[in-house]
Image (tube, rainbow, N blue to C red; front, side, top):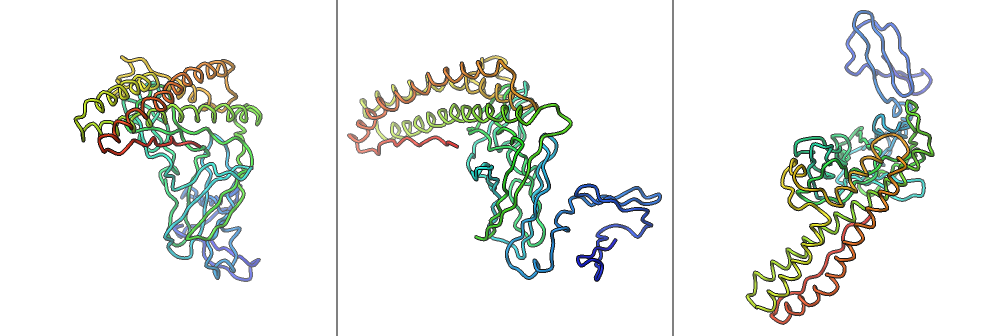
Amino acid sequence: VYLSYDDGDHWESLSLNLPDIPIADLIVVGHDLAIATHGRGFYILDNIGPLREYRGAMANSSDPILFKPADAIRASSPAVIQYMLKAPAQSVRVEILDDKGQVIRSYPDTTNAGGGRGGRGGGAAGADSAAGGGGGGGRGRGGFGNPNPGKNAGLNTFMWDQRYASAVTFPGMILWGGTTNGPQAAPGKYTVRLTADGKTVSQPLTVKRNPMHSATDADLQAQFALAIQLRDKVSEANGAVIQIRDVKREVADRLGKSQDAQLKSAGDKLTKDLSAVEQEIYQVKNQSGQDPLNFPIKVNNRLAALLGVVSNPDAKPIASAYPIFTDLKSELKVQTDLLQKVLSTELPMFNTEAKRVGLEPIVVKRPVVF
């Protein structure tokens, strides 16, 4: 098999690892080259888009080359992103932008280092963890086995799973029948942006609905609109737990450095009231994937379960999802309001006592937001 870039004036081999056998026919279907043989089956060279785009002038430039991705089909396969580096790169970043120019995914992804485990009822893995705890879990956020873009010289392939960023999670989190995965991207126009060692190039990417499914573009837009709200509420709930645990850890640190009775009294009350909120947001008794069988799930798990119901099928949300979401938002707000009340009243009192005995006050970390 030979390839010409100049209408047949010059040819170069494209046989790659194809054995020396009779070729009965060649056919290009979309972006794939199929090669038929007599008695030796057939071979496929998939995604020949870069071959179509390649020009000799590209070889003389030191800039990274980002080839135009083929259209991605929702709920079918990942979006394939291919780029060429002339030399090994120190840093490579791949970003996905929506039609408004907002970054919706960025790789390497360092926004959420936490991880959780899933229970058998379809439990969700944390964003970067492998699902455990007796059963199913969501696919991780990375690029389908290649979570970070390649830095090698030559052609690199990265795959976007067509999802927005996952919800915030925390270490050891166990959910039952829920997901923390970000929603699937709705059909539409997106942009792939590649930055290698400070040099940036972009290409458009189109996501199309799956023709095998009956959902319309409007159905999938409605699904995304609700799913992204649910993801943000799951993040808000989990972010509150992270914030609570950070403050409790700091309180324990201060109490370990002083035996002052007033400091201990203020610290114990602050810890108790923070724990009361935490226990309403997350089932703190969960230690394994089977524990939700014995202990009722809390609001973060119910939000994650609804997120799974809404985002898993390629369809518009069921009608009951909206009033259920309204109820769950109200439940979460009660707890987050209580948390802010504790942090705005009791934490300053504890910090006053800490300063009095010569200890550093506690500064509350802001939760991760999208």
